[in-house]
Image (cartoon, rainbow, N blue to C red; front, side, top):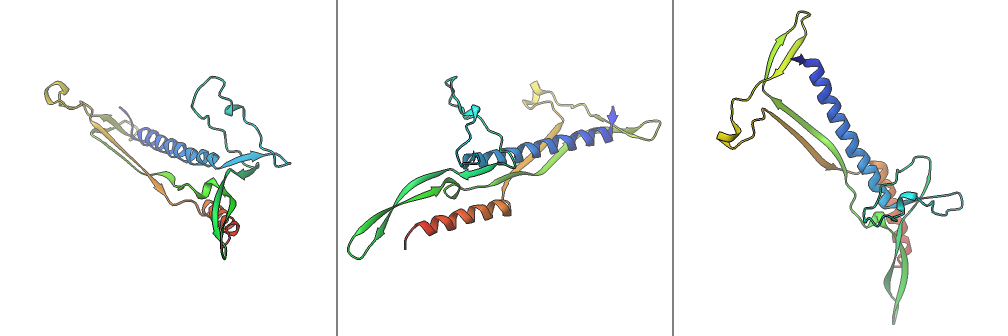
Length: 178
């Protein structure tokens, strides 16, 4: 038997840890769209970008606060109609405006269990997981008596990120004639 308070605290910590992990993945996702630069505007190399081991895995670089970042861009050609001809204009397009951005977050966690409940001498609630009466071999179902449900959903982008994306979209529209 364990204190009910300890069980709730452990569940709460696990859910918080899961939420922090999902949020960190969202921030690391931004590294696909920006690179850090020095005072001169030159990209700062990252040792993690070196694939000397031959792996295809792209390591994750920590997105540091306080640094200076520039958007990763691609050059695209746009046709522009003139009076009697078509001219090609090259435009630098920030990658962040080409990719959908969603922010995942843990929105709901459910913990369902059958438990034996009692109290100790100090009046603390004590719980013990009830033993399942089912046999896995007979029923073909697992013997476990606990069901945990964790729902992870993509949510709206944070307002600050959306304003950054909107700014790059305006800059892109300004580059395209017409």
